[in-house]
Image (cartoon, rainbow, N blue to C red; front, top):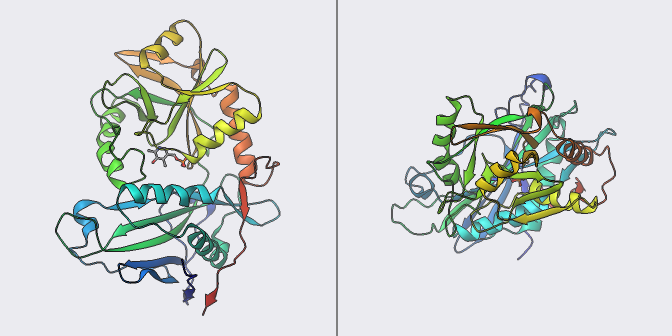
Length: 364
Ligand SMILES: *Cc1c(COP(=O)(O)O)cnc(C)c1O
């Protein structure tokens, strides 16, 4: 692909930055955004960094009608020496292209969008907060813009990146959550879009949380969509269990989203020589392990929280308390290590962090 240049228009009015202890997830956005367009004749073109602003989209744009879109989520972190670094960003753009393929969206140039992201963060670097546990959340997304109501893949798209400073996920320390095993709704099925990071998966899963939150649960544990027996994910996170000294996580099966955090947890455990297995896990097997006193820990993994310990599982009218409702040892160790690496406070033995330096050509 021919190297594109990025046109930059800087904002003249800088927004006021919120206090870092008052940041809510995903509510505040930085001064700039990245945008580029796709057309069949020009491919991806018109790459620009612009002042953050509303965009104009035709009401007939296909995204509004048939949901052809993909998104990503990753973070930039401020190190103790003041530098800004990314955590495994290439994995996110690789995954975006896998999602794009599933949604029949043309591929992006992964190297180019990573350069564009670095340039954007460089421009908005003052927005990367520096207090404990805070970071800059990065949301790349792509959507169909062709004004057409026929059901077919769009011929036009927009790719954008917006940035949002986020506060600490665990302001009051890590708190295990109560999870209900979902037996009515399903998140995804093999052959569907569960493997792709696309908005429709979220739209269809909102109702489950809505129902269980009324019963005092934070999220749901999703079972497979066919037999409703095998564990898939927790909320919008991947899920891990420690059973009799071994860490297990559902094997990627075509309906589970391949989390970057999931992969990092697996790699880290292998690096530590802690037994870790990817395999099918039945809900009944998990309940039996609990009865036998062998279910030692459970936690979700994802970019927002890194690790979210599960203190109790509600299933079939019973409540299974895990590790006395407290954060387990391995959960804590993984959390401390991954966040330590992300913030540049620990060694990075697996080469996960990427400093922000710009190689993008800039035409101002
Ligand atoms: C994004 C996502 C995850 C977690 O992925 P990370 O790359 O670790 O943030 C897990 N499950 C679903 C359904 C997701 O959309």
